[in-house]
Length: 238
Image (cartoon, rainbow, N blue to C red; front, side):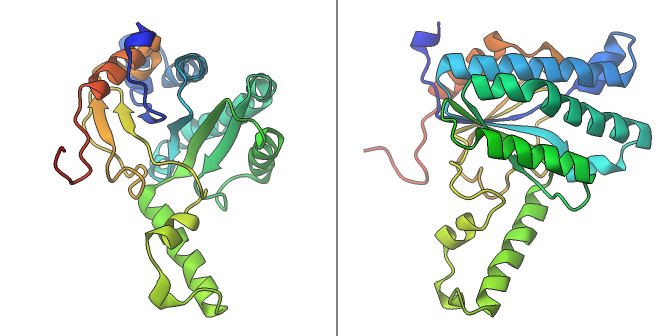
């Protein structure tokens, strides 16, 4: 089936439905998050097999801090466990890890793990895994404007020369391609403050499957739907 797919170079996934999956299984919510991490591992592997070059995943939003403290603490520890347990496999698999999102609110040891993962994998080119952690699209744009303002104040940028390229160069990670396709699991049909600048011309596919039940078959189905779309980027077909 994979040979029939028009596989996009860059895909973003809003991984939604962990809590609802756990509830449906009569399990505590944290079990859903644990299962969601395993699904992420399988999805990374599937992305490599399909030849996807960049995979964005929405792991923890800026708004997720409003969840119960015990759940937030569990998610922070789950992130640490992911970097501790999976970094070697990601490195061996040729996966470059990039983290977007604010870091000021994170514990210092988690920041060190994030920086270590980015540093150790920076030369890998099999797949770029972009993890949005403590991330919000609006917050990223605020950080971007502040970075540009600082350079304007230092007379490094002429404010009259600020354009799309300047803005893109000051996002959380410069040089990342915009997603061709955005997939959201869990049945909801909204973007939840995800990649607001980058998804201006992305195609969207919303799936009813909860994230812990997502697999390569669902990924291929979303890609198949993407392949049926006519992307004109505001122009007419020739």
